[in-house]
Image 1 (cartoon, helix red, strand yellow):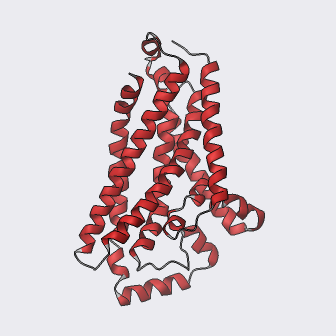
Image 2: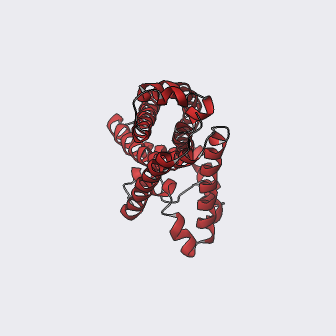
Length: 272
């Protein structure tokens, strides 16, 4: 009952975010055919060479990337898309446990024989399924866009599918980390009034701290390189440059925040 109720309530958010992200993906992919034009590629390379290393770090450009390679170009554009994916995932978690009190339906839920731990579990599973559906649909949209481009330029569909699988696999795991943090916030909150805005600000703050860490370097850079958006950066996944230490750290963070959510929600005083 809780699972299906949560899943249905997430559908409108899912399709709203899917529409926005699909449009963004389409716009970024529309630039790819231009990269294959010799003159445009020369202009782009000149533009990159004119940028300082700090500016390249801020904008996400990497010297080792071949922007004419469809796999690496997909990784490049999805490092920006991944920020929006993280916002969506965190909003799912941040809205879940506080939603019923905010809407006044908590009494109805507790009129059924169900424990608080079961509520958390079913809501978490519904959110994970919603997130998974979102990524599957976006992956299909991405493949469709590439397929249309493939009618104009010669591309290997097999390579594209493999690249999409690696990119979305990384984004799925990274998004779960943000979802767990959102769930933790939701377990402490009694209202959803500020959860969506807070989720967006949290992800943007993580991006800003990462950028500053890359600019200032030293120990600060080493720390931000273990941040979720960096560890699961689509560029690294496409090039198979996996940071297993960073993955382990993020997995621990994921587990800790989920466990804390159970503990806090079970001891929380609810307003019926």
